[in-house]
Amino acid sequence: MTPLQFEAAYAPLWAELEKVIDVAETERRFDGARMATLYRRVCEHLALAQARAYPVHLTQRLEALTQSAHRLIYRRHDYGLARLGLLVLVDFPQAVRAHRAYLLVAALLFVVPLLAAGLATYRDPGFILHLMDAAQVQNFDSMYSDGTKALGRNRDASGDWQMFGYYVMHNIGIGFRCFAAGIFGGIGSAGVLLFNGVQIGAVGGYLIASGHAQNFCSFVVTHGAFELTAIVLAGAAGLRLGYALIAPGRHTRIEALRLAARHAIVVVYGVIGLLLIAAAVEAFWSSARWVTPAVKYAAGAACWALVLAYLGWQGRPRAGAAPASEGQRHAG
Image 1 (tube, rainbow, N blue to C red):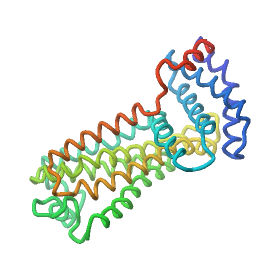
Image 2 (cartoon, rainbow, N blue to C red; image 1 turned 60 degrees about the vertical axis):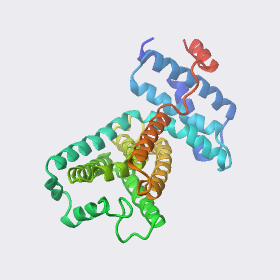
Image 3 (cartoon, helix red, strand yellow; image 1 turned 45 degrees about the horizontal axis):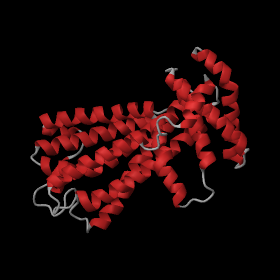
């Protein structure tokens, strides 16, 4: 069966599930038995499409449908620990993987300028003055000098809690701009990613070239696993919004934007959580002088491995599960 034949055969069923999901999310009521039946069938179709390596637009549509139906079927009517646990353990990592194409673009838009600016300022520390003024550069020198009491902290900061509040506002502000700017056809999100990549890379390259490599690297390595990942994820969610406006497909632009926002918002919830973790680590751990650089490097490596493993594998169905095998036989 070709992809076109496959889509023609099952498109009415997918459209019915889309309609049921729309009614459930707008009116908060739906036929649970019918949705469960449709959900199982679409899961079968998704497994078959992935096994046959059908075009990515087809598998992405089925992934979005199954994820939306899953959230509706298994959601709780309260918003306590059970619902939070479902979001953290299932919904968020699944939503990240469903945005993998946007995630790749966002990562390139952030990492490539970061490396380029870092290399430029490492080779010529004076290059940083093209990006910021001398007072800012001097402030960075003082923040990461050997004589400072706490790494990465302004001299007028009174303590860890004040810095925690500052990091929360600062980090979430960046994440929100990365996401919300996507409403401008994705160009805004791309611009925020590029700007932050250049700024972070330039500061890093300058500090390393200026002899502050150990202080700077040991400061950023741990919380960077959460903060930098969150920035890229927020940018990916923003790009999803922008693409929905540029290429709405069979929907109107407003409908496409609404559908994209419904899926992207799950990523944004996770981004907020990652940024809160990053702020806490940055304020109470990264800046600490009593922790040796070797310990921070080890903790940073563990955090990077944990974040990547969590986003890559958490929430995946168990391999060889009975429903999947039965579904493949039925769909075939």
